[in-house]
Length: 104
Image (cartoon, rainbow, N blue to C red):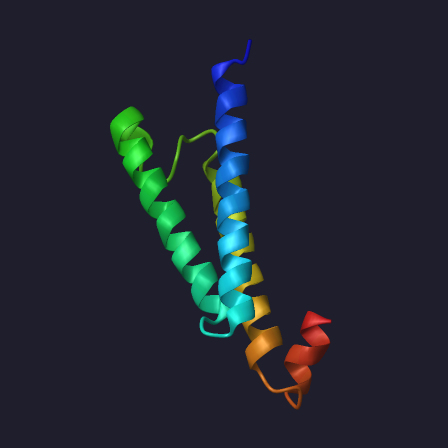
């Protein structure tokens, strides 16, 4: 039988496949910028996580439990840096040598 954690992993993988397919479709039609898709996806994830934490663990909502708070901060910093790097690589002209050297 499947345990609860296995069902959560399965549900997250199905959701990820649907979101990835939708993002690919929107990006290839040319009507939506991939950066906009990324920002909307981040907002939806934040909203779902806030609702989940509010209902299950209200004392851990803003920054998580104290044991993993530093890991969550590093993960958030990595996501912001990755998003900024993607934006610079796709939207900054190639004449901007500093960004080209830093992001290569």
